[in-house]
Image 1 (tube, rainbow, N blue to C red):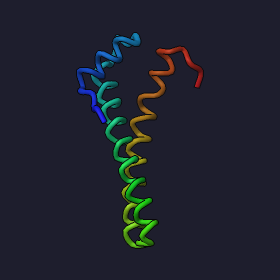
Image 2: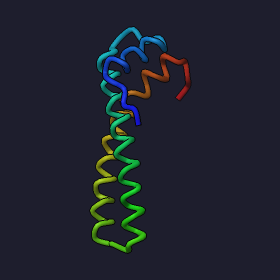
Image 3: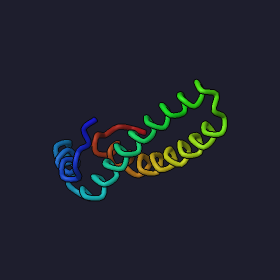
Image 4: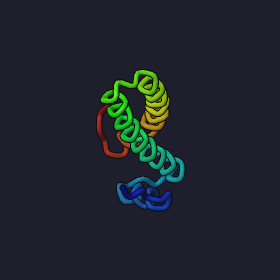
Length: 91
């Protein structure tokens, strides 16, 4: 998977019309991308744990998944309102 750099996210934000808070919003986009990759990895691990009937490791993986989802949610909740406003989308 290709991970965009902070500068690339800033360029993407400018391209869709943002003119304020670009560095902060770019940071949130980068974090969203990173946490999404972590979620996908952890889901694959959880699937493997389940197939091996490894209850203990599955529970540890589920804890990690929960923490990762919480981080993802934070960044999404911070980024989504300005994006909706910029694109004139009603929440």
